[in-house]
Structure formats: C-alpha cells, structure tokens
Length: 215
Image (cartoon, rainbow, N blue to C red):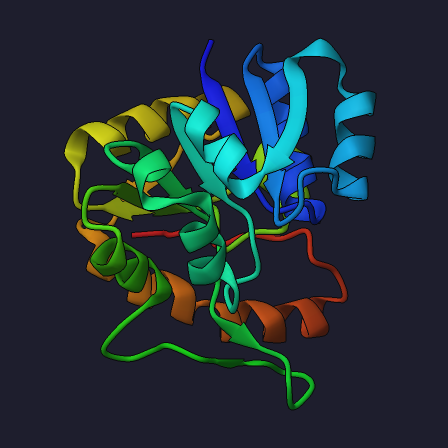
C-alpha cells in the first residue's frame, strides 16, 4: 500500500483516485481550499482510504503525487503544494499545456523546444517527475481493457527507479505495453500528440481510443 496524493478535483483526478483506492492505496485529494466540495463528495463516496485537504496537505501525506490539474495551472498548484512537501518524491505528471481561450481546437502553450513536463522538472529539481497517461481519456487510463486492443502507453522521466516504480503501478491498472521514451525531454512529443488526439476524437466521434505502435 502507498500513500498517494491527487492534485486536482476534476474528472481525471477522481477517476485516478478511485482506481488507486480500489487497488488498496490510501489517497488524499488536494485542492486550493481545505474543504473543497468536489473533494469532500469524492472522499465520502470512496470510504476510509479516501481523504481530502489542501494541495499542501495532500503532498505532505504522500509517497507518490499525481498531478491531475489543468496544464495551465499546474505550476501554480505545485507551488501551493509546497516545495518542501514535494522534495524527493515521485510526481506523476498527467497534464497537458492546452489553451482553450480561442475555442476549439486548443493550442499548446509550451511546445517544440520545451514541454510542461520539462518545465516542472526544472522548477522542482528535487522532484522525480514521471510523465505518463497524458494521451488518453481518463476512463482508459485506469481500464485499458475497455478497448479490444488497449494499445501502448508512453512514459518518460529522468529517474530510472522512479519510472520503474510507476511502470509497476501502471501494470496494476492493466497496462501491459508500456514504452519508455527516455528522459523528461520526451514530454515534448507526448504533449504534442494532443492536437492529433483531439482531431481524432472529432473524426472518430468518441474519446475511447488509443495509439498503438506497430513495427
């Protein structure tokens, strides 16, 4: 059992948190305020292994932290979580730097020569950032068996041991075909898949699909 923090109270955070509890982990959902209504409701529906608090409360309690915030506010959320509460821990970054201010399709606020994953790692040098799960609908994140062929999951990060630990955790979600793309700079390519993903969602008429690498 691990003590795991979920930063963010949206659909992604709730889905990941609920899955982790079903696997026997203790999960605290963090938000800007101590008594966030969404976090309270999620906690009540998930039993004694679920709790809630501020970003800082959640990060301080955790062995592993999942960043499930919107990419545009991720850095602010991590700052509120507190550098001292993140130090030395694994941060699983699911976020994408999407800008919806001009409608659909969104643009990327960071791209080409940088990424959100790299930016987080630069700003929090003592944190072991692992980028993964950012190219999927949240239901598929925790249940790849919803597809006849689950396809591939991508992962990257600078710390091999942190990646191994998260790879092992993802296997308990049901993921078998995980591709390690290398260091955190691979976040660029992973995040830049999002414009393709969004176009595919419109073309296919569903968000329940994934990429499968064939060679």
